[in-house]
Length: 409
Figure 1 (cartoon, rainbow, N blue to C red):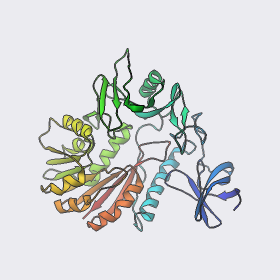
Figure 2: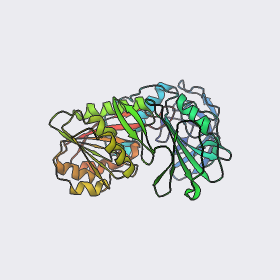
Figure 3: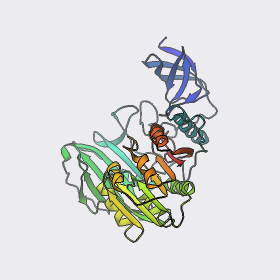
Figure 4: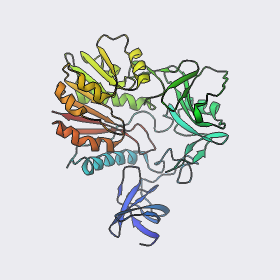
């Protein structure tokens, strides 16, 4: 195969790249779209597939659009992958990617995948972002590596987060990353620092903000103010903090909770188990629809915040510890379950233990469709049948999305 070839692209892969066939090999091309004819240069070659760099778009797709960010592209910032893709097409691609993952990795012949749902703005939606040291300023990692592209603005940041970024757009020797968060409901600001050697910097600020140091062993050291903030999501107020996954697109998160409710058909007299419950997004969000919610979470900071948020409720029970270990010991019967596993997957015997406890309807929330697809085998072995899935567009302008999938027994 020549290093430079012309190629007709026919599909889109998980990871955001377009793909096409050449000499019986699949060629993956970033920053291209299905339907385009392109000229590319092979950069990584294998027996059955290859990666290629886009050189020219010979026949552009009608869905191709002009990126708004000057740092977008293969030599710039890797935070967004799809600014060159029209918004409706982005939504279509995400459903196609999910369907492909369920078919190829999950072994589901004809998976029912609903249209991608979206809420809120396609720009200026992020209320949280992690930035990296780029010398004397901050930046975002370049595509496919650890090099950092310095930036002085970002079009997906909420205006309040943009303002916080401008206040903290400075780096120093020993700084690794800065995690910035703002609350839409309270205006609170949280800054989480990571440093080499866990060195705590001396910081003075002249405006209200909380600052913490995230240590390499996962511990949180408060430096200024409290190590948390409050956010109202779908009518419920949560205490949130560093150390565990938390929402960065509030309207999309509210849509996600709504989709979970729709799939579970929760009601009085039912008990719900929320596994990998984190800060209690589902635990608190669904507590008023069922008779009992049982949350299971390993991260102590997330569990402490969830306990605070749910302190006013008498129908919530929280169990701290590794979910596979905790579930082995639980005996109380349940009818419903929600799982939000890490990218590594469900963990040992999660599905069979949920079946043992009596969960007839199970909702799987996946931040990576490949994780869901890989866990299909465990779910099938526990007699859970895949019904359907809905992608939620939690990260416009990127290939990332969140899947809400329904299983029944």
